[in-house]
Length: 282
Image 1 (cartoon, one colour):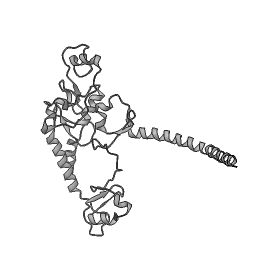
Image 2 (cartoon, helix red, strand yellow):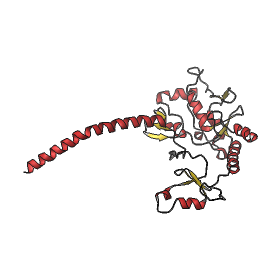
Image 3 (cartoon, rainbow, N blue to C red):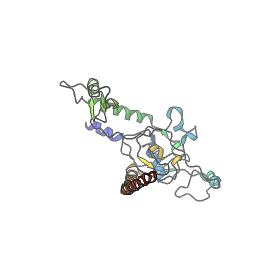
Image 4 (cartoon, rainbow, N blue to C red):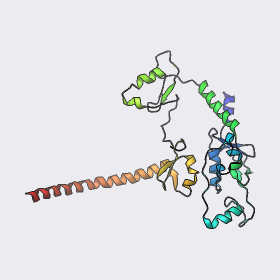
């Protein structure tokens, strides 16, 4: 038990504190999730350069292709020459009008050092496929060691093979069919992997198949973590889903209150118009 916990600590990203997703190997030998790394660069004022724009990048080779993160914003024409001469953006400590391209510095959250990523930033990093496979194997081991039993079987219980987010329960095959009879509304419930902790089913991004976490006010649509770093949403107003929900709910509540308060006046006017029509007909 202790050794498994120690191993799990080694598989946790130092930024998001969750198990690695598509980890990148930094020059200091530490690792960080691809999305986390791009967000750290954005927070430090660096423009992210899409490795897919340069196929010679180690992270863009067919065997180690990184996820398709957004390219940096296209510079205005009057700044294009200056950007080409001075690198991919304005970085702390860079002299104005420098002739040589500047390297991108990445603050490693594990060793607290500024790591030199070169001119191409994340595009020069390798995706740590070995670590990615170890994380996947660890997840499978945890699932196998903690078998989940059907919550509706009579003793002896069978092992659960399906879960239902709407019912918040795990079932064996026969019990799932029994409690989701054909022709009823429950038959529309989608089966999920069995689990002991059912989270509410979140909305998924149709483009990246990730759970949406933010709302873009400019586009008026929900976005996931990968959407946020795409050039499509550069300089857009993006807020967390909860904040956007509360603001829109308050706006809608005020609109409904105004409509309901005006309802009696509208009904009175309708009645008067109907009387006028009858009087005119007579």
